[in-house]
Image 1: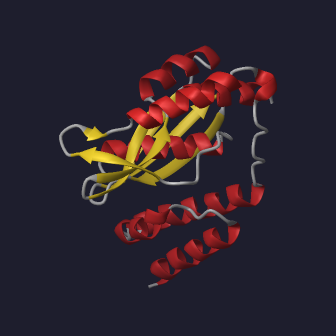
Image 2: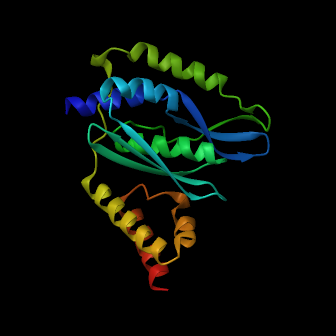
Image 3: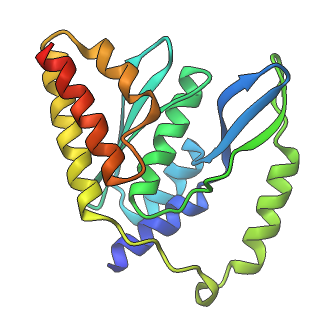
Length: 201
């Protein structure tokens, strides 16, 4: 448990980047994600043998998997994004979520410039203001409990995805997974059934 706490702390400390989930005109929806350089710096102290692997499920639209291994614990994240790099960052954040790092559920919309990217200055300032007073371990919010059923459902979906890829139906599976693995067991089951139908079809 102590090792998992250290991993979570490292992931939380690296959560300094923003990834663009979607763009609408001059507005972008952004989500927090670990900065890869910061992540390497913090995880190196926890586990010098940590590893991170990427897999691109789709280029258009961008869908990426991130497989994070720290102290023998492996978590995989899957996400889409405005660009491949955004999808990578969001997949990494998804993997961090499965290590127990809570992510905000509300969408954050900011100004977006095609050349300069999203303007996250205000969000960065807010994040610094939130992090500063809660730096002490005593004031940490309790971690959300991991749901074994969700973990199991996720593994079943991943096994099915491998079967679909082997059957040459990876593209169809990717379209289903654009919305992720589901936020509840019921949603995950519905996605699993949808993937099963593709495999049988």
